[in-house]
Length: 229
Image (cartoon, rainbow, N blue to C red; front, side, top):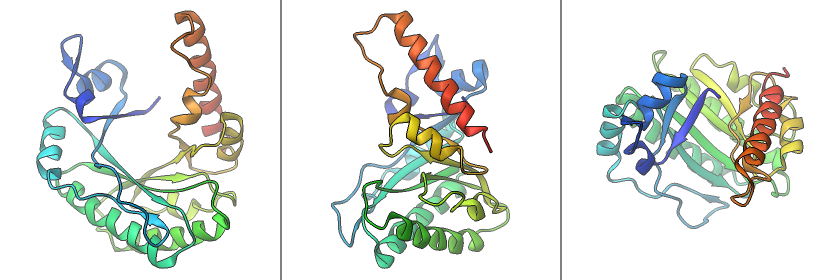
């Protein structure tokens, strides 16, 4: 496990008397990220863009003081709309510039819904839009990308190989774990940032030992898929 995405409340908590982000890094070398978005607007033009974040500046300052390394913000693409996809990517990179100015690394996450007809076409438009913005970044700026597992293997390899991309991770997007792992294993330089596929089968009603065993099996399978290419 390389990183963990924290909610604001979790970031402001402590583990063994140490701020959560510092604890993760200092004890386990797990890189702490902070979810900074406040949700999404209603769907328009086939997408959901981010809601306004008027307190972003102060939130980033608090993140820095708590030992946060980077941020995460999620938009959603639900249709093959060139104007909608451009709007999502434009907004993500506009906010990313504010985050970079603070010395933090933004995770840019324009999720494509897995049930979308012509998902592959949307992924082509998304790849082009992201690449355009990456090419405009200063050489000192590094971002991360969190993208839905693509229909075509290595669709996003050109992005993963871009010099301004620190890391590209995949979201499971509602695929079951086996499907998500199989798709991930086909993509070079893409590792997992799964939540739904990670927690599949876990329940509060399981014994601690059963819970831990299932979680360990899930983590190992996702790790193996991340290392497959």
